[in-house]
Image (cartoon, rainbow, N blue to C red; front, side, top):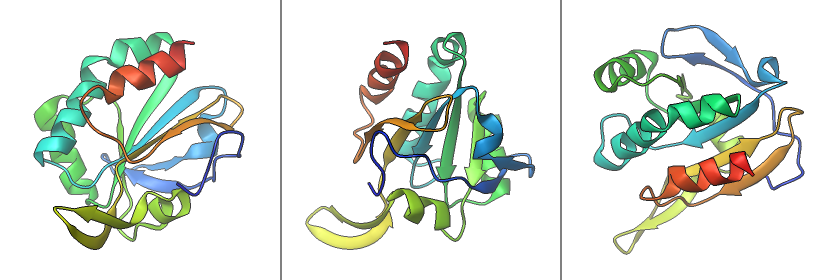
Length: 153
């Protein structure tokens, strides 16, 4: 990742799954969990989203906002959120500018081949806008529990 604990989280504005603008700095005063993922409706991304959904109450009790970001369109995010009952924000980053800014897009390896793509990553941001912790690359299984542990400590 391009950012690390102690850095000020880069600000951005992206459209959410309801086609409304969301600006990171407008969420100051709350903890924010940004999770970057490759694609709506794929097996790993669906498991990850449903993990954040299933433990949404734990994040809400910690006054934390969960935000998923992928290059998918607003319309795709809307269908994804509806189909899986996702109670959090999904943001569309079609040109991958925010992903690149955070280091969640770049060269990666899969099945022995190298290519450019979304690097599954998560950033925990404190209420004052500083980065508390980053995870990259993320393995889906058990990841949400690690984020919960970090936010409740």
